[in-house]
Length: 277
Length: 213
Ligand SMILES: Nc1ncnc2c1ncn2[C@@H]1O[C@H](COP(=O)(O)OP(=O)(O)OP(=O)(O)O)[C@@H](O)[C@H]1O
Ligand SMILES: [Mg+2]
Image: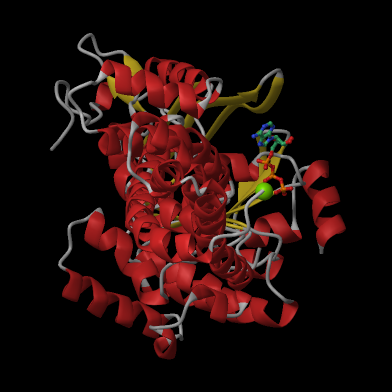
């Protein structure tokens, strides 16, 4: 099943020390560059996320937050640099001489299994019922037996508070309900990392709190690693352990929510928080 | 010059209906070929390799820029050992596939980008992505347009008479020649076409409305 020649496991000596952490972080951006044409969106971006950490990405519009999540989900390709996930290069494979080359579609699909994403616009499959939206990938990607996948889907629907909607079509659900299904669908793949890109921005205001509460519950009750892009500063404060402030494709500052929100070091962060709070 | 001969109508009808069965068969099977092949062309057109897309485009251009009649006669001359009806069905199907593929292409392009991204985020294989997500949504969007092509193919089946397929117009001409009653035979053939395609068009329009176009 594994990719042909070189093992994908990262030998310790190939890891340039980015900090003092003895444990390899679950996610590591190593001088990641993303360009669209001449436009440099991410400029040698470095940051790490430890296993189990809940990280919130904040920053002004256009600062590259979505781009970071899309790179992690391999929906976009890095222009330069390497993203490491669990010690393996996410979108590269090792050649015989130890250098890295861009991975093919097959390898990318393998890498993606560890990562799940919830989109701003939900992106449920409108041609499938709620249950099948959730079971589709476990059955066809993980090879899970249908009965087992369905039983788990029912549990997940229960978790997200939609046990009555097994047989509904996405179009019959409210935005908030659709987003809950999308969260259940992502969780059904048992990802190690869950990416959330402004998952409440498309919702009517009265539906936001419910979805945020759900995500808070998931964060507290599982060991899943979360990267959230959000404009909900309360959520960032309550749920995340670490806030990364981005501007122009770089991390301006990072720290605990308490630190960032009450005593930001950088002028840029202060301006941004003044504007959104 | 002559008065309309009602007896001839009564006499020709069974013959024409016999031919009509062939007409229907050619339409149904031709549509099937066009529907399946058109889909294959549309999907191949999105292949990442130009080794696939360039030849496909060239063949399509060639088929679209030559008349159906020429293709029929050409194919009949090339494949003399193949039954004319089979040639007719294949040529009709291939000819229309170049159009239905455009319809499918538009239908596929109409599936939101977010659907592809959701598939990737779930690691679905390309096959499963097409089969379970993209095509069901695309095909739903294109059903009415496909139906309209089926109707226009139906109306082009008389060309098959040229390669001696005994469809309805072939029978009408034969009857007309044998009994010198062209007016009656062809009027009748026209009526049969009308009676068959008008309700079908109405049905398509209804379907279009129901699918919300
Ligand atoms: N496909 C693309 N082609 C060209 N430029 C792009 C593309 N996607 C994003 N960009 C550019 O990259 C920059 C970062 O975009 P990104 O969506 O990551 O910002 P963001 O931080 O998520 O902003 P927002 O808060 O508005 O969602 C923007 O300047 C945007 O115009
Ligand atoms: Mg964004």
